[in-house]
Length: 222
Image (cartoon, rainbow, N blue to C red; front, top):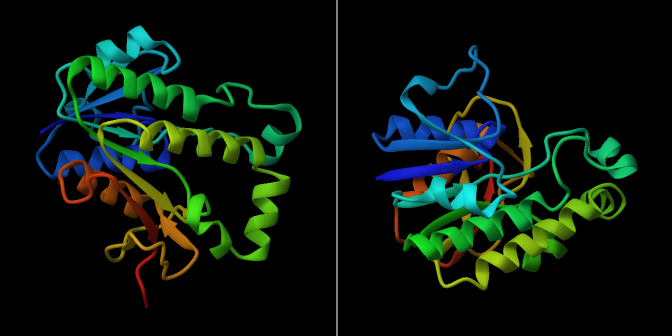
């Protein structure tokens, strides 16, 4: 399989690239600038496609020739600073507008398999959030959550073989077991490692079993 990852230099995106490589797939990464040389990803085995996800032509040129697309777009800056003064380097609408460009490019190139990372707490999982999480969504993350909701709408209203992955709180920790995955919105806890999310993104890209499904992802059950 030939797969391309958007958001490939973020935590989950880097992990997805690594897991795709370890599974023997041909991997491309859409990036704005070269990844750090000291990174733990085998970038020498990855085809780098440089561009801006907000540019439809650059996105289409990048997705051409691939079998599957993984989207792990987001804003990596401090969320409190983003809420106060907006993002410094990434458009607030990067998730929705960027994913719309990806969807349009896939349609134009005849590519069907799309896997998109969003977040737990959207749609029918909203009422399952803890009070503190709802407060964080409303007071700090609201612009980003609004954009992610629009992103999900772009995906689910497409005619692609899409899968939405909704992880709970992301943490930097080694993967110790397969994550808990549920199409019913159930979770085992409220944290999951970026490594686990990347592994599941890679898994979802390589299977048709999750087509047009939404998966809640949390850390492995004790």
